[in-house]
Image (cartoon, rainbow, N blue to C red; front, side, top):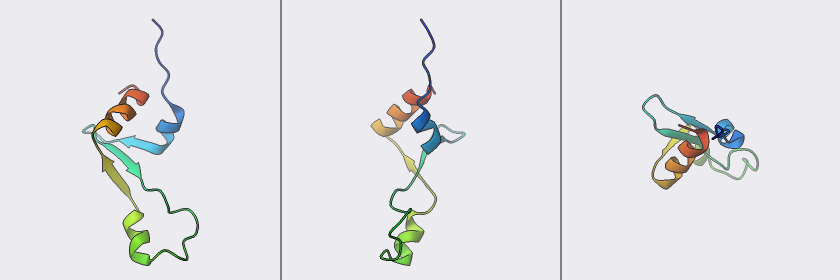
Length: 64
């Protein structure tokens, strides 16, 4: 049976940490930033850890 290809879109958007946690960036930080408060923009920065079924599907897409 052939090897499965990794999902390219997932590969670009998600990082898997050294311990296997799924880290994903936040949405809503690309445009229309003038109407969003500073605290909202700061809270959207950085990577957030995801778990549960979402993380399971991401790992399956990446072949991890």
